[in-house]
Length: 167
Length: 112
Image (cartoon, rainbow over all chains, first blue to last red; front, side, top):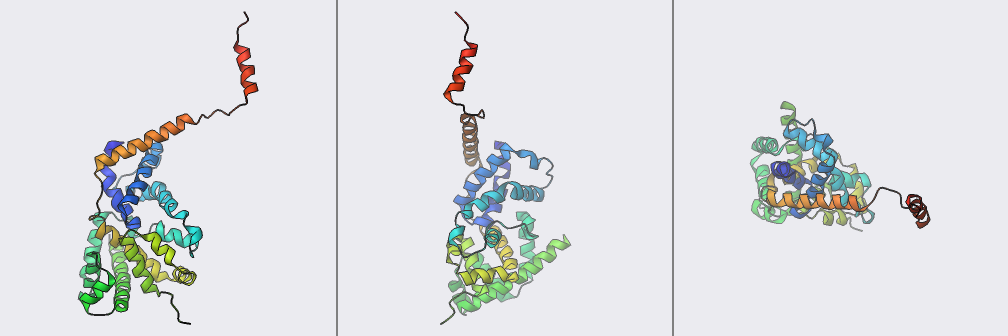
């Protein structure tokens, strides 16, 4: 198992990070994912590419553990079970199936097509700045930044989907 | 009464922030019933949420303090060992009451 873990750990943990944003939880989930793979590796038999590997591991091994993380919370939430699952462990969209390097490429291209202000807002957010700090930097209000970010993200979605179709 | 529920763009911003900071449960708990309904019916939110996850992966996964693969492999080994141990300690044979066991024992006993 160790060679497989060494080879795939970086790929899987970065993928999980998209959904959890927390290293400790990522490692806890991944530990169980690898143990599940060890118990029943049959789904990985015909995997040929990194994209296929991610998709298969997410669907057959990761998603159930991701769901378990949040399932116990649900009785205290004002969210339908389906919406909770869609927020925490969604069905795979077009972008979710891309590998890290493909995503970087798609995102880089899309960012290059944004207006300067839109790009700046996203870049600052990616640097880890809060919405208030971004508003100060762009000399505008918090509300305006939230709206700008929302619109820009929708634009990015459209551009990145185009990229996926081109590929 | 003033409407204190967050608008979709505010919800997305808070979702993105929570995901970036690794505290999604806090965001989930902060949702009111109306906000939950608003999320459900907003196609734009779900589209944007997909990109937010991508940004989270691309922007922050590389900066995260991720463990060394070799060390992590030993954690996986320990997990597998504990599963094996659990599988061994829980016998598959049906538990039987003492009387039946006694009968079985008597059958194999050789007469003196």
